[in-house]
Each structure stands twice: as C-alpha cells, then as structure tokens.
Length: 209
Image (tube, rainbow, N blue to C red; front, top):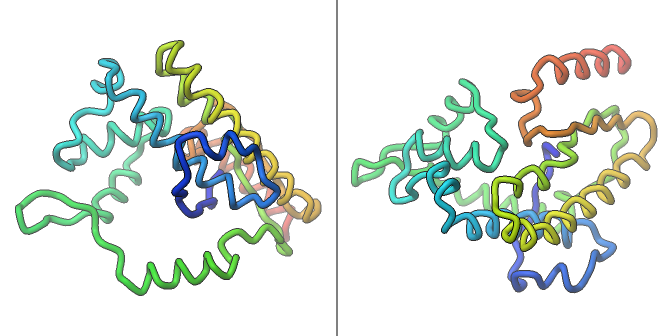
C-alpha cells in the first residue's frame, strides 16, 4: 500500500515469524517487509533467470536501477519513474553514479517522528483514499523455483496478514476512509492501472465535495 513505511529490525531471519503477529502493527509490518525483500534477492541470487533480470550490482546505472526496480515491482516502469531516478542520483568523485545523501536534519526528524509514534498513526479524521496491492507479495515470489517459493511463502503470508490487520485499523475510522483493493499490481498502481486509479480518484474527489 502506498504511503506506508517503518523501521528496520535487528531480529533474526525468521524471528518475527516464530513469535507470531503481535498486536502493535508497526512492530511487524515493515520489519517483515524489509526482511522479505532481503530474502527475495538472497534466494534469487543463484538463479540465472533472476540474476539476468536484475543484472550486475557492481555499479549504479539507470539500467541496473530499472532492472532491480522492475524485479521488485512486477515490471512497473514509466517516464516519471525514470525522472525520479535522475532526481535521486548524482555523479560522485570517481565519476560514477550514486544515490544522493539525505541531509542530516532529515534523519533526525525521521527518528523523532518514529519515536513519538507519528509515523504509525492509524487515526484518520479526514476523507482518505487508499490503494492496496493485495496479493503483491505472493506475485513477487512467483518468479522463483518451487523450493524457493516454499522458503519465502511463510514470510509472504505473514506480511499479507499483517497488512490486512493494518488496513482494518484504517477502515475502523469510518466510511470516510475508502480502501481500493487491487490484484496483480505493484506499489505503483497509478503506473500499472492508470485509468482505473484515475477513475477511483475522480469518484472519490466528487464524493468528498
């Protein structure tokens, strides 16, 4: 779902899965997403069809960034995403591309917001429209062998379950919070399903007048 983010975890590979789903949403959703993403690329590292899709990680380029992005986001790409890549990068002292460093004050403000719980607020008082890529994590692991899918599926199931709990918490705010569940789409539904997203947004804005 767009707009969700959170902290990384120092726990073991499947530590969170063994402990089950805790009641506090932000304690599991995003640590699991981070672990899941790490495991996808770890498991795919020795698979020729995946390495050929992702490409070399020895140097950053538009091509390498796009291959990795599309492997993670079910093939999504657009001119706007390419522009975003150029905005995120700069030429380093060695002449190669690198991602721009965030200013120190950004990190400080981010940590303060996290510690204060502002980053995980689920109370929504104003009209809101949320697009949810409901089966995204199951679709991501389909590129791997059956054995690798079995290894990744428990984590994918845990992420999906935690995300559903989080969505339910948003919906408890009332009918002014509208959730659009989408299948076979990435975190960028406005790229994958442009017309559908635009229609939903227009309808939402009209109903919110």
